[in-house]
Length: 200
Length: 170
Image 1 (cartoon, rainbow over the protein chains, first blue to last red):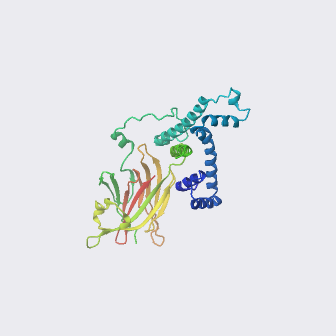
Image 2 (cartoon, helix red, strand yellow):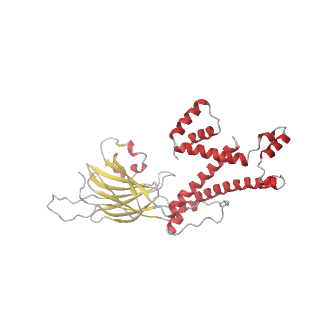
Image 3 (tube, rainbow over the protein chains, first blue to last red):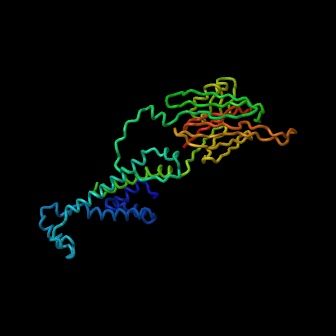
């Protein structure tokens, strides 16, 4: 999706009917030209309806006319509604379970994302790329033990090491440069005598 | 913020966190662990006076240490980024006619790059002596931490020397 975060927020505000006339006209122009924008507004509206049904209390219940609101709600229900068949009782426990399930799914997704991001992917690379990755057995993040700085330094090598050097017929010198600052690791200079005068 | 907004924000944050975790995981599962070799070709000379370092080179305190301290003027001649794919060499034609070959050999367990570099010696076809000359740098293998430059110097060029500063970046 090619929409910026600000644009997405404005599209959500548009879907909620919160924009003034000027911004609404601007967003409607965007909707006319952007498939992504239309898709987002459609998704917001669909999700909004689901959320409204699942989470939001009917405004009438917040008023003093609660008896009238209940009766209006009962009258509005179709006769075949399961709740009425079960004696006209709405299963609040089921609704609560639905809400908890939705929250649990979101929490698991967040936890899985954080775990995947935090784990060391390099070990898997070196262990063999052909191995298939198994899903994490534990989905909830466990507290990580503190890692000593020495271990961190060992896990992430610093500086440059010369492993092999061949330059027949040339004089070669290798200089190891010490770190010049805490954040700058040592380095290596390979200096090769150019007796062939390869330059211009 | 309405309940809908809260649910949307939470869902977006969860999705973002999941994607952030999934991308490195996908790389670890089979994508090629490539890298980039950033090459700076620097012309080192010794001139009268205090000398200077080309601002285009950036911060490179190594140039003030031996063996670079034998020169006092450094000018950036060229800068090139070479994409590196494991076991596949990338070449770069230098200003002196030689060709630099850089190959990503492996990633080490301590997250450094094992790379090789070689610089050929082009034959002078007009010279009477057609005997093949040895490479200037037949083989250099280094293990370098990401973003830590290593240097190959010594090629004679226009009254000074060429210095290659090679930095491997993930």
